[in-house]
Figure (cartoon, rainbow, N blue to C red):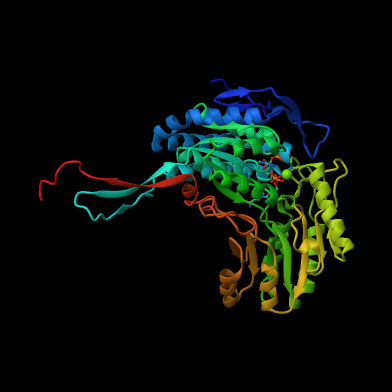
Length: 492
Ligand code: NAP
Ligand code: MG
């Protein structure tokens, strides 16, 4: 098996298929740095349907050997990958920041949490997950067995280019599956450096395959009947299309989709706690988080003070290059994504939203977008539609009833925050907010990797949750095993 050296300054792109690094074709393109458009990050090949088919073949060929290697060896390899994620955290962070724009410290955090995820999933497969049942027949043992799904397709977005793939790849490999990973077009080279980590940790040829290329190549991969399950994180339209295609051939599918997450600030909230957390939830990672706070629901009694204090905090945000340690907010990932956010904001303003604060932006790249705080009403489209950037809207309410009703008034249900010191409001929030993640006096963003993660309504599919021990449920199938002695009962 050949290895690819990926120096941090100009990493080379390549598909990883069957243990071989394939650095050309069918066509080539260049990965762009959104903060420094004149400083391309590196070249890489762009695959198509034939690339996807070759990767699936490699995963099929490697499947039985990887399953039969046993859980201990697989756990050892993941533990080694964890060490490499830590050792190479700076290198990964630099490539990732140059491709995606996120602050170096945030990107480095993804690498460190990836290490923890590998270790956690290596431990989960040593936990008892099988069950023994009573049998009506003398001598018979009935138990379950967790078999790997087989070949798993992993399709990931650019906004957490290190951590989200590892949420999926680590438990998939741990459970004995082989993987075809179609990474996002905006973040190919950091994916190559990550695949290199798994190779160096000892993942054998074909057990993890990485393909670089457009959505249509991902489409070819997920439609391949040899792919037993697909785990996807990204937008609603792509996710629902993948769901329809994979379920039509009776494959298993896991979806993590968009969000339009509310934060309710009640009149008894401590604004010293609420203001920085709501602003961080709304603007952190340039608002390019599925769990970002898009909608702020403020009780009338604290509305004016909350808006004023949030406005100051937003105006003070320093926007800049993710490689600049003094920046708090990086650029938007790409010009097209920036244009979509600008369009969403323009529409909101045309519909009557008031801009109460914006931060200053550098003029060195067209990808910078000023974090923007709006006030408005629930009649705005932006109140219901996800705009994937640093724009958040505050709406005033007069009662608890109205606050909870507005929080739920969306097709999405990923994350929701409530700021209050009243335990009855907390009780109501945890029981009645329609969200897969409910946070009390904490931002809508952020999660612990040993805890199940996912949403309700249009934010997720119906498969077991990602992360935590439930991840194992998606990547395995349960068999019921009946074992009889095969000889006459000597005690009868
Ligand atoms: P996206 O356009 O849906 O892309 C996600 C992935 O799917 C990318 O790798 C993309 O490839 C690929 N893809 C596109 N079309 C495809 C097709 N027809 N068949 C198979 N794969 C296809 O999403 P995005 O713009 O990268 O990410 C932003 C979205 O992700 C937001 O809506 C955000 O809320 C959501 N998100 C959700 C979570 C969560 O956990 N719930 C986390 C992060 C982000 P290309 O890159 O080549 O287009
Ligand atoms: Mg997209």
